[in-house]
Length: 484
Image (cartoon, rainbow, N blue to C red; front, side, top):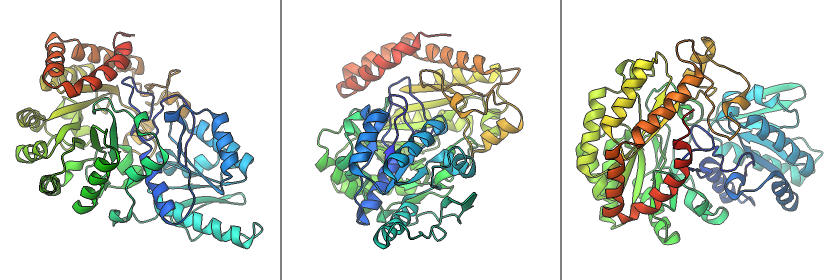
């Protein structure tokens, strides 16, 4: 199970994979869940996160030869797809293993991805935990019968594979409904990974990332995971199961400062969110946690979350212009966002706000509105980035259909340093202008005297925030003044 080498600290598990300016590197979340499923089925598995460990291709090749796998599962991302395919092909050549690719890009473009290199055997599309389990079972049968025997891949739902010169796409695999069947991803981290390699600039360090549910019921046009991997329905683990994993983390990672719940929208089911908080309080589980949320959580829920140990909400505000929110089907009103931010501050919750420039209908005027809106909301931290479009999303189709892509070479999705390269350009708002406007927005937001004074006060009144502020600030400051 491989997150393959590419650029240092390159995060494929991010919704928008890149080398981040704030130093963030995500856990290989989905690979880790599938690793646990395979281990529970009795297979011997090695999970390696090359970018987090700093391993190059030679190092991975040595590990692979020693381990001698029968199955190689390699994660992919749009920006690294050519690297990912070619290295998986090299591993197959050296080990003789069955090579399968997973991830958002290959799920959206399975035929195109298999055509990059004929050495790749298959793609496990979308939510691939059980697809890999069935594939491993089939390969194990082949090994017992002898390698000359053919394997039956047609029965495995969610698999795309080669048959001679043809590419076969099996039926889609239904999404996993009983998520309690899955192992604790934190237990997989403990066995296979060094959790201190991972850092999210908005969270306390060190942290552990888990999910308590998969899928998102919202209809945003740009978000890749619901559209390509996990679907539009929010499937949830039981409260008891999540509480048990919180206990496991507290007992097995005593120095972890925070748990981050990486559900697309943890607060999509507010009744469950409140029930979860009640369970934490009832079981006297005192551990700091944060989550992804929409800007429509009510004050009562936020109060309960704060009381139960929630520290921060990561929120996609996206724009300060109502027409842009409408265009991307955000399903959100500007007044609702303002009230949410007021209530979050009243409840004592920090907010990490994400703002995206360059969406459908964007102009310099709407961007100015967004920057002003960000300063008005004044979240604890903020991201400003040009829209990144990924195959399988409605926004990608819009950009391609209207001729807004500067390149269809996926290697161009990153610049030479591995950071996002804006590939959306229109005559009235070029890709170069979008990058400059994002740079200027960061400066305007972070260099406000009131903001700087607030961070100093936060360090004095909340000493536990100091390591996060220093680690993120040191990395981010190198980029902040590079106004191009």
